[in-house]
Length: 291
Image 1: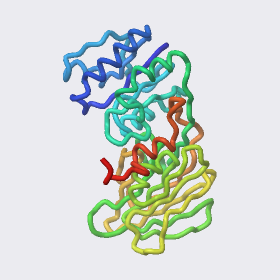
Image 2: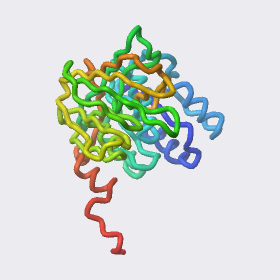
Image 3: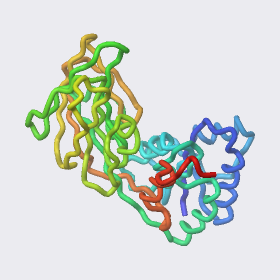
């Protein structure tokens, strides 16, 4: 099995976990490929030089599975690298919350044993695609979590004229608007009081950030809808962010968003469910008074 390892460069304290991961893969006689920047980090920060079959450079590679070692941010960057290559990704959590990277450090060996026995499931997750005039957005124009339109400064709001399938919806006067997938409903969207959506739902949520009007609420729409946004800003510019990858845009440019024509494949253990993750990560039902 060809296994690619992608990782965060902010986990000095996790070196024991990383070494355990490589030992388990060698035990399973896997062909190990490591993302080039992560390999450099391992050698420079740890003095750890694992035996590998090769390094991953560029955006095209042939793998059976990809391992993302870090938090959800690392998982999002791994998904962007994998792109349309149809390679399933397993998220190993060395971060904090971890909805995408939900395999904890004490589950690594058991999880890999299950994977090499072909005992796992693959969930397909919807992405959003951003269209801009003259391809103004220069980076990777897909988002697994969300596309956020935000003000640049700390004072004036922006106005976001919003259309669904060409029909005018409203003009949000707010600090911004988060357009999220079901996967992203537990990320930025949740932090601005957007609803939690089950990953398999065919939905998109529009969640305003600090709206000026109290009667403006998050809206869940079918993922078949085409979203068009036109932004007004007093300082003539605004920020657009795709899973944290941000660029500055001039006001007046038209943005179109729709469901992408491919999905990100996420590896899950059979004993891991979304509802279990909600209970554990958000501590649902926990009584902090109990010890």
